[in-house]
Image (tube, rainbow, N blue to C red):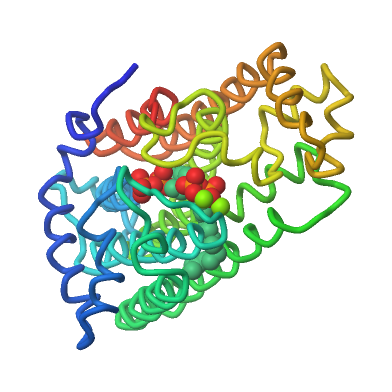
Amino acid sequence: FSRDVDSLNPFKLVAKELSGIAKSFEEAVAINHPVLQRAASYFLHITGKRFRPTIVILMAYAVNATPSRLANSKQSVDSSPRILPSQLKLAEITELIHVASLLHDDVIDVADSRRGVKSVNALFGNQLSVLAGDFLLSRASVSLARLRNCDVVELLSTVIEHLVHGEVLQMTVDDNKDNLQVYLQKTFLKTASLIANSCQAVALLSNCREQVVKVAFEYGRHLGLAYQLVDDALDFTGSSTSLGKPALSDIHQGTLTAPVLFAMEQFPEIREYAKRRFKYSDDISKTLLAVEKSKGIERTLELAKEHCSLAKQRILETLPDTSYRSALVEMADFVLTRNK
Ligand code: FPP
Ligand code: FPP
Ligand code: MG
Ligand code: MG
């Protein structure tokens, strides 16, 4: 169960590209101010799973092996793996946006750790964490503009809107919050949109057929949903040490996630605790007990599994058989077995 990310084949397959990206991050965040520089580049040195850039790079190679939109039908499938500089840049931009959102998220969540180390807000304070996040976003925007592709700029700019919208949905009071559909919509905005739109963008950069562009998006969407579902289960089942960030954080913030929503169907009384945002002293412990006794975790992981199967199915029926497509399939399996 505790597979090491770095020993996984998909990550190895793109190890060279990932280290190239790490180098160009240095340039992307170079700024003539030592404190801003340190805060902004902190999580570019302490890397996470690098899930998003890995997927974007794999998707780039996988879609580049399909015949382009302009090619006539007789053209044979190009078998030599290739990736465009603009696609590599996109992988970098995706990670920059991700890290920017983490710097803001840890302020909002008052989280003191991230990636097994102190969070930027804990080390540098809230103001600097917010400003460093803004700075990373601005540098991501400049890199995006330099791709000279308006459709791609529009996709990634919309992602930023989605991140904000998803986050606001999560923190505001709303009577529909105990609804799984609403939860999945929020999850798309907060989590899946970045990876889905980044996958779509690399397909656009490759000038792929419309069907391939759509499949790239759908793969990212299903994978992103599955990833967040697993994350929400891990919030209940993992420890702070194994996660490298606080455990049980969702419920302590009054956030309703899939395990609780499923548990509610078996134990309707927790709907009341949730409505009052777990304000009485034993609301949380009673909810935790209900989640434990219910099939909440099991059903959350079951739903994640369904989304992973859909992600795999979409690319298997459309993209040519390459080692990159296999790696994308393996990434979908990895989402289900990760434990941090
Ligand atoms: C931390 O990301 C952020 C979250 C856990 C929110 C959930 C969003 C995702 C996990 C979307 C990812 C989906 C795909 C398919 C890539 P993280 O756990 O990835 O952080 P890390 O960068 O520190 O590894
Ligand atoms: C992690 O979620 C947070 C996100 C996936 C998105 C956060 C988005 C914002 C703060 C909006 C601002 C956006 C930008 C681009 C600056 P989590 O708190 O559930 O996960 P965690 O356990 O990894 O903290
Ligand atoms: Mg958080
Ligand atoms: Mg959060």
